[in-house]
Length: 173
Picture 1 (cartoon, rainbow, N blue to C red):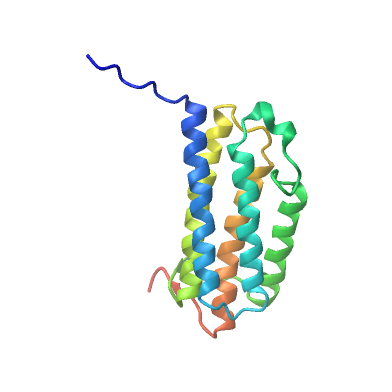
Picture 2: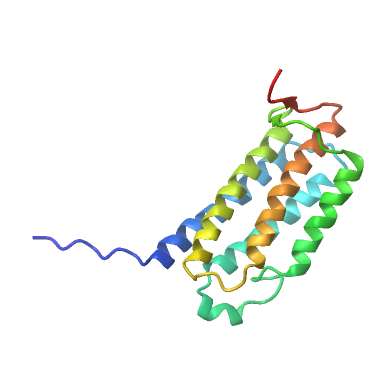
């Protein structure tokens, strides 16, 4: 009788899931960037966010006992990175206030890609919460980063629509 290969520990399988989710987060931002965003500074911001997600991935792929080896801003998410996201949110909201209704994504390809990126970030955030609950997350700042990133992407999609003279459709008539 063949022996079944051992199953990975919950930390490893959770980490693989979370790291894979992080890798998937990079791709939709690249798609949005390739669609020629019209909003001021958005293409550069999306590229910066793609690069920052490699920092997130490095941190999530590192076992808590090795967290001390991480380099802030290079392989470890910092509080300053979270604050920078909040500043970007405020900058975009000053130009494009949020609608007072739930939106249906898809006003244009670029905002739709950004909304897709947001949903992928939310999924990765949930996977990271699972890591935290299992005791496999050394520093919760990465969770704050993912949460603020998701909010930034929602705002960025509306910011792009406003730059194109569009508005997201409401979720109801």
